[in-house]
Amino acid sequence: MLNSGDVVLAQVQFTDSFEVKIRPAVVLFEEMGNVIIAGITSNIKMKGITLTKKDGAIKDSVIKTNYIFTISEAAIKRKLFELGKNKKSELYKDLENKISRLQMK
Image (cartoon, rainbow, N blue to C red; front, top):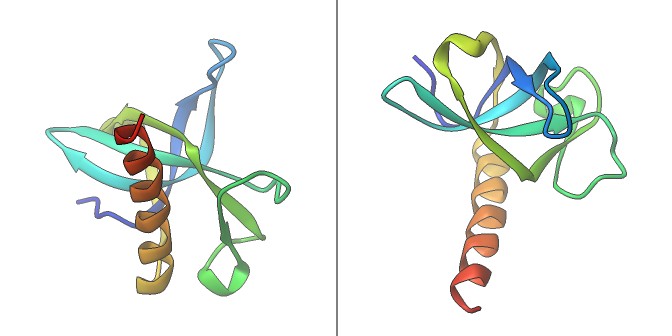
């Protein structure tokens, strides 16, 4: 069972090709076998929510809140760790801000 805030290894397709690779991602929610995830990168120059070794990451990374997509539950290879309460709150606030800015347009 997947929970919001679970950091997982998942098969993801890159947006600029048909290539599929196993990459870390954070589960936003799961519904009827579909899992909405945000990608994670180790390129710390990218915008997003920082994820440190202290948070549980293997190396300092960034949750890319602009890289959200749906995958099948079968594409999840394994759970790595769960975000702490404060990090989940930071993630949800960032996503909420992005969505509320869409409503103002």
